[in-house]
Length: 384
Image: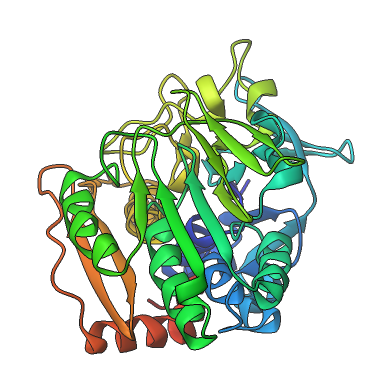
């Protein structure tokens, strides 16, 4: 009987694992010794970093999508549908349709999702660029904006940790291009005592934000929003009036994880999966790996994190399937571009042991970022 690898989640992490294993063990697939199944909710792959540009009209919705079935090598079996639960004792994935998929190896790349409903009034009073519908609506709001106060309120945890800073800088550009900057106050809030969770990034931002005339407010944890009065309240007791509220809602893991496991939930608080930081194996569940946004690891929930983790998991799975021992380990590597406005960008590269060191923004790095937006589609295919 063929060994069956099931990957749940068709984002960056899941797509790379499925593609890499299918390509690197193609001979075993063709010999009938291995099956690779990718379970995804839709035959659609969304380039999530592009939502930032969609909000400013710099990319179109059509540029952010590709069919998952076209991206995957033909050796990958695509299963479209929603997962209801995973039974790690019986090694089955149960679909909402009622069907069950038996697995020998399971990879959970189930991502994260914003939950504005956890903050009273936020869904009614705030805009967001973290979903396609939200970014599209925000683009319309910005196009009709004529001045006032824009508050950017950040909740934690959230994916793509530098995106709120990027939004602030690009918003400054956008308003200047429309001749509205002098009539607009931009307020950037953050829940910690600094402007980013990574101290070197916070220090970098603390110099650049005031230079752009952006007001900052730290120790501002989202508590509630009054859509009628247009006021956002913090847990610390600070109230900010706004004409336009752009909020990064706190994120949670996939809902079905709370219904999964072998008696005890597969995921912990926030539906994050307890994961070994080096092997990316799910603690207490043999034969299961987790990666990308879905884990509880103290590392950025970013596309590059998913990429580097997927390479480790795929290489170890192929080695194990071939009868060897997978000795690859994830070192916490993350690499992120940071748009800084004015046609410039910088980047950060760090791991578990090495902190990031943001460099002065340059136009060259900005051009690299724009080029990556176009070449991203090679990544889920296992090419990059």
